[in-house]
Length: 169
Image 1 (cartoon, rainbow, N blue to C red):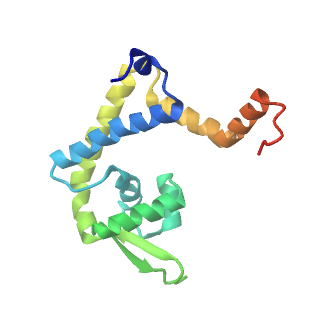
Image 2: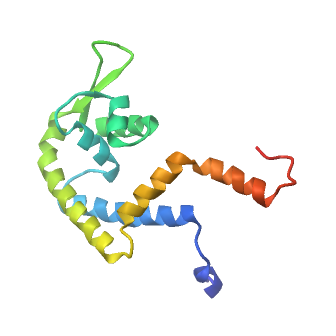
Image 3: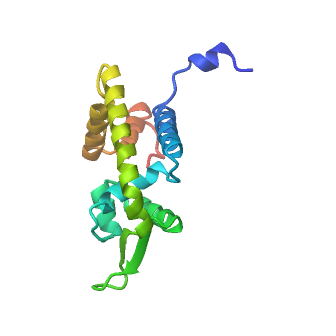
C-alpha cells in the first residue's frame, strides 16, 4: 500500500506530460471507438497533411504535420498496415517514397473530420476551464525550447548545481 507521502510528492515534468497525454489520447481513442472507427490518435497529423488529396514525401508530411521524420516514418508504416495510406516510389527519385491516402483512408475522412471537430471543441472547453489556456502554454513552451533546447538547459543546470564536476558532458 502506498503511503500518503507518495501521493503528495510533486511529479516531475516528464511524468506529468506522459499522464496528460495518456488522459487526452485515451479519451480521443475512446471517441473513435464510440464512432466505430478503428483508428489511432497518432495518425491524425499525417491524415491532416494528406487530407487535401496531395501525395507527399515522408519529409513533407513531417514538416506539414509538425512531427519528426522518424515519427512520420513510423506512423506512415502503421497506417499502411491498416490500409489508410498507399506508398509508391517517387517518379523523380526512386529513393524517396510518395505517400497518399488510400481509398479506405479517403472514405474515412468525413467521419474523422466530425471526430476532429468534436475534439477541437472539447480542447476549447478545457482551455476555458484553465487559468491560462493549455494550448497557449504548450505553444509558448515549444517556442522556448526551440530557442534553447531542454538538453542545453539540463547541461547549464548541471554546471550550475555541480560546478566542481569534471565529468560534465
